[in-house]
Every structure is written in structure tokens, then in C-alpha cells.
Length: 374
Image: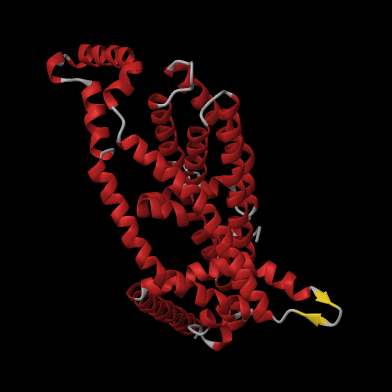
């Protein structure tokens, strides 16, 4: 009798898991089909998470007996969000565009003369190891030809045209995201209601708790990430300026390192390569290329040390309540599956999965261990 009951329970459990998996696959397929709309909603949800504290603060402000209605607080918050984003873009885009045009008209041969001797020594060393004929192998020619493919007027014009086309498409995106964000800010809990609508009624309370926790963790994470990038950019810019680098070059390197730092591991590595190239083609006035590169590399190494051992542990572990090694493994897995996009969304996605796993699968031992801090 007991065995029959256990078999029934096992069969019911198996069928329940199969049904749940089938529903999850169906929901995933629908979300993928409407992925553009899903992206609009997720971006709006993130902006709403960032702006929600300001909305609540504005609603608490009272002048005599008058207090701001929530719709007006939401509208003001939305305008301020876009002003901040627009202000940052207005500073970054002209700087980057100006530097790209400057590099596109650069005489690469002349710019690389300062590192020609080290390149020749490297070429001779490689030729000795691999027994390559010198006439068939030239590091300088490889570097120049590679750079010319990326830094020429045709490429720049193509990039600019693509940006203009993207900008025209972005008008629709901007309107859609603004419209959705306004209602997420105006109606607290609207996003939770939308998500919980796809769950059975008995799980609605769990979904609401999970979304509230996710909103808190992601709000802390994105705020910390923005703070981290601003700190890194500021320190790099100030140090390079103190060493005598031109304002536009120092700011360009600082902006590139700050922007790319949001991509774990891969972003800073690419930023270093760009910074080194800027140091080669535009060294500090009165200084050699070697000295300029030493200043750039030393500055970035020190700042990255501060970032890796002080800032990132605070953001990637404390802000999302996860162990640093756990986050490191998640980022590696996400990068191997999704590339750059995977690196960008690794920590937020893992945060969402952990919170929902705690709400719905807390009886599993592994889930309890991974979510005990949230």
C-alpha cells in the first residue's frame, strides 16, 4: 500500500515538473517571438527601478497642504532621467566622434615610428623562433594594414551613416520606452502585476515578493555600477591630466575605460588596447612614447587594482548578496554562451533567477545554499 502511494506521489511530481517545463518553454517561445517588445519592457522596468526612489521622495514633499500627485512626480522623474542620460551622451558622443575622425586622417606610418625599433626586435625574435623569411613577415605592415581597415574615411562614414539610421529608429524606441516607463513609475506595482498574470493565482504572492526583492537588488546594483564607472573615469582623467596629457586625450581614455568597464573582464582589456593606441599616436607633449605608455598603463593598472579589490567586491557581491567566486563563475558561463551580451546581463539575470528560485524552489538544498544571503 505504502509503495503504491509513493509511486503515485512520484508520478504526480514527475508530471507536475513536466507540465511546468512545458509551460516554461511555451512562455519562453512567446517572449522570444516578441523579444523587441520584451526588451522595451525590461529597459523601462530598469529605468523605473532607478527612478522609483525619486518618485516616492517627490510624493512626500508638501508645500502647505499641497503635495505632488503621483502622475506628476512620475513625469518629473522621467524627464530628469532622460536629461541625465542625454547630458552624459552629449558629453561622450562629440568626444568619441572627434577622436575617431582625428584618427581616421592620421598618418599611421609616422605615428608608429616611435615604436618601430621595439617592433623590429620583436619581429627578429619571432623570425628566429619560427625561422620565417624577413621579407614575408613584418609586424609593422600587419599593424598598419589592420588599423587602416578600421581607421579610414569610408569606414568612418559607414559608421556615421549607421549611427544616423539607428538614431532615426531610436525615436520609436525612445517613445515606446518613455511611455512604458511613465506608467511603471506612476502605478507602483504595475510591472509586478504584469509578470504575476502569467502565474497561477496561488503563486501571485510569491511573485510579488520576488519582484520587490529583485527591484531592490537591481536598484543597488545599477546605482553601484554607475558610481563605479564615474569613479574610474574621474581618477584616470585627473591622473593623466596631472602627467601633462592633452585634455581631449585624457578625457577620451577616461570615458572609454569607464564605459567599457561595465563589461566584466573583456571590456577593460579592450579599453587598455585602445588607450595604448592613443598613447602611441598622441604621446604627452615633450615626452617619449615609452614614457606615455608607462604613464597610461601604470594609471590603469592602479585604478583597476582599486576597482577589482575595493569597488567590484562591493558592487558584484554585496549589492546582489552573492559570493565573489559565485559571481565570477556566472560571468564566465554567461560570456561563453552569450558573448559580450552575456557578460552584460550575467549579474542581473543571475540575480533574478536566484530570487525566483528562492521563492519557488526553497525546498531544494542547492537553492537554499545559493540564496541564503537574500
